Image 1 (tube, rainbow, N blue to C red):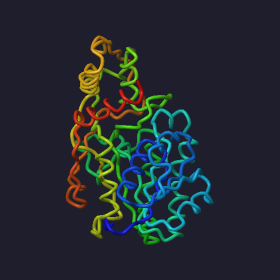
Image 2: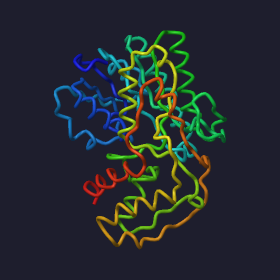
Image 3: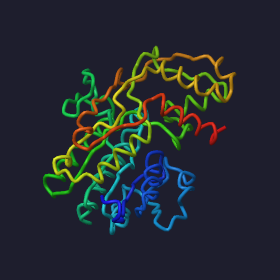
Length: 327
């Protein structure tokens, strides 16, 4: 995508955590942005910084409704498909709704993109696709069996994208997100992500509950690294770089115990009493993968990916944002 040529980008789930950050980035880059969201997990307040931007259009609709998808893709050059129901526990509690949104909704968007002759369909895939594969680091071409209904849906997304590339010539790129965190991530609700949830609890002097002994490890990935990957997936002119999937991560791993240590380190700069909040350990969660670490070599070679934010660097930014916006 040439910087001097304005494009129209549809971001599904654009009122969510990742989606709203993508909306903001591409609007600031001078692009036209359409946001499609049903606000089941997204929030109107995530759009406050740009809702009046003349290059921004909001469509309140549902990807499970094909007419909403067809409306949203009209005149679109690129799609960044972020709309999904996340959370392994949610999918275990309600696999039908997770499948409806993540599989049927995804297929609707692919069909709409095909029919509208969209140039490229870039979608949020997931590290959960690696399932019971024990090898580290995770390499895109080596996966295991899924460990949750959510993981199944995200793997099915990849299969559908591949078929649409081969059968209909639709350019697709899947980005396997690894534990993304950062500004605008919702700390509330039953299925809140661990970092904003822990931050909120610590700020309220409540004890975070770590599932297991805290030695499970994750490749925590700051939102700006994810934005970089989406931008590269749009702009790439390398034909060998499309119709495939990429790990979207920092390429390092930290335990949950490490995470809490860093959170306290940055939060006590705002409130020293947070240092005394005890940590509680609970049962290991069903469907959780013990360890996760991404190889980002493929993204570096094929897309020129160069992540700037480690866990610690990202947490400095994220904690400051949460303190200013949630306290």
